[in-house]
Amino acid sequence: MKSLTLSTIAGVIALAGVLSAKEIGQAAPDFSAKNVKGEEVSLSGLKGKVVVLEWVNFDCPFVKKHYASGNLPKLQESSTGKDVVWLTISSAAEGKPAYMEPAKLAERAEKEGNKASHVLVDGTSVVGKAYDAKVTPHLYIINKEGVLVYNGAIDSKPTTDAADVETADKLFVNALEAVLAGKEVPNAKNQPYGCGVKY
Amino acid sequence: MKIWSFCVSSALVVSGMAAEHPGKAVVEWVSAGESWQAGGVVRTAIRMKIDEGWHTYWSNPGEGGMKLSVKWTLPEGWTAGDVMHPVPMHIMTGDLPGFGYEGEVVFPVELKAPATGGGEVTLVADVSWLACDEASCVPGREKLELVLAEGEAKDGPGAVVISEAMKRVPVVVEGVDLKVREVEGGMELRLGVADGVLIDPSKAETFPETPRVVDAATLIRWEKSGDGWLAVVPKNEYAEGAVEELTLVLAGQRGVPISVSWKAE
Image 1: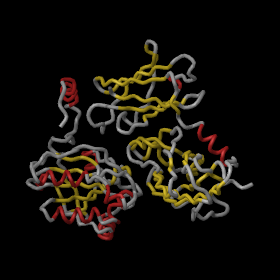
Image 2 (image 1 turned 180 degrees about the vertical axis):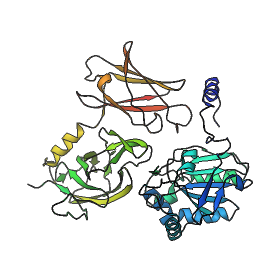
Image 3 (image 1 turned 30 degrees about the vertical axis):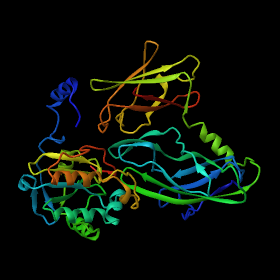
């Protein structure tokens, strides 16, 4: 972990008023959004569980890479098998071409092999903006105490080639394993790669 | 004489309208000449023509985006140098700031022949890129082939394309130096420019080539400070720990674009 110098401490204090709570080590912003079946899902209702947030746009080539290779479906399946709640979120704004109606998003998620606990429709982009989700895929992990512990990329190779999945550093997987083992998360914040979220 | 280049694009050209290509660009591999000699260097370039309304990315793509990638399949003893990137432009992909290209872009690359050997050779470049517009991104991929006969080096029309492209590739220039210091709220960049160097930093466009150091949305503006130039810029939100190195590209109205690097001692 970074050592805090006096100036960064001063900076943090100065910024505290404008920082939303999306920083590592802080309480993850609460939210409530409807899943594709129309059921309300809230973060506060998931206290006590490790929660993964995955921003999605199934037409983005970086997202396709991780669905076509089976990487994301496998991760979703293995994680939910360990009592992790996995939320796949589409924050494309209603009215933008990337926005999908809930039924259509549900159909697409199934076709792509998505195995998340819920697929959420964030058509007002409220959740995406609360977390400052930048790209698809962009991944976050929230621990059992409701603290944000990972904000970053799925892996280390910012390409669209499915063959790179095997050889990339598994940044997200390493983070999730650390969280489940109660260890400090390595590389807790890093630059995610992908297509911009269509706000 | 035809331009010595090979293009194995499967794109169809629709007559009477601008062609839309699957990867939103057409790439070809241009060579300065048609031949090679043992121990010699063959000057080539990847030429990319990007569909209107789309863009591709620089070696530092900024937030989002992806740099051009080339996987080589070369005969034994051949090596490929770095793919050289010309000066980019500031681009926005939706809300994400970055650096890239529109229209036509040419990436020079030198191939080094082995010290011995001869005969005809076939070289393969598997090129991948990402093209984006405001709303979406599309990956592109082409396998390009270059066939060279053994013989004395002789420039063909491709040589002009490459020479022109080289004028936009930044070079390290004697007499230009950079110093970086972290300050409250960002970084202080100090640029030294010796007399006789053909660049006016106050009129140059400056791009951060090293990814994740300078915030990608920043327009770097230089102001005269003592003997040199000063710019204060915000640090990239994804910079890991203390800044250890930075390479900047300065493109002015006169002279060649300049590359200047700094490393922490």
